Image (cartoon, rainbow, N blue to C red):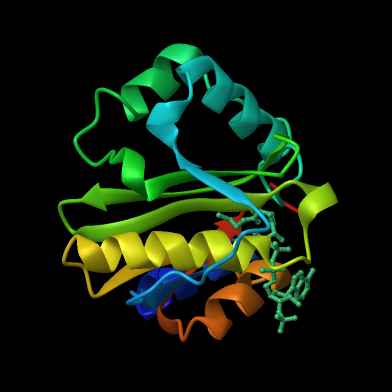
Length: 186
Ligand SMILES: CC(C)(COP(=O)(O)OP(=O)(O)OC[C@H]1O[C@@H](n2cnc3c(N)ncnc32)[C@H](O)[C@@H]1OP(=O)(O)O)[C@@H](O)C(=O)NCCC(=O)NCCS
């Protein structure tokens, strides 16, 4: 819920709900140029089959805070991609290592309300080598080329690596959403 709704918040806290997680919306400026980085092979999603993309997505999510165990159904995944107007293959990037291993992915949806970064994730064995930043920069440059000034990303406040990454790109916090849970009558 949005904490600006203070009367609703007080009511829920009074009923025994407690704060659980805090999600922050970041507005990240588009960039003019992707950095020249030959350490990785970057490709857009339409160079892979849906099955490959689905497999990598599911693998990666096992290492993302809050999404472990969550898997797409293949029909849902196909519907979210090929059948979906906000999907743009140039904004769904896959990074491979020089030996061809899947290393990371990043995607942005072109929603009617604006560009929304849906996911940036690097496989643990390729983290802390600048790959997340490289992919994000390429995506932000693609967005500039499509006329966007910025994109929104929602990030759990406890996700230190992602917060650090978007801060490096000049991201600004634009909204905070709290999730409250109720564990039953005490
Ligand atoms: C977020 C993520 C993509 C970063 O990828 P990465 O390739 O490791 O990031 P980079 O190497 O480009 O690092 C970017 C900055 O974040 C910092 N960083 C990386 N991991 C960090 C951590 N665990 N804690 C704090 N800062 C961290 C890096 O030090 C770097 O800053 P620096 O250049 O000043 O040193 C990666 O951690 C990841 O896949 N996380 C899981 C997926 C996820 O949670 N995605 C967000 C939800 S959509």
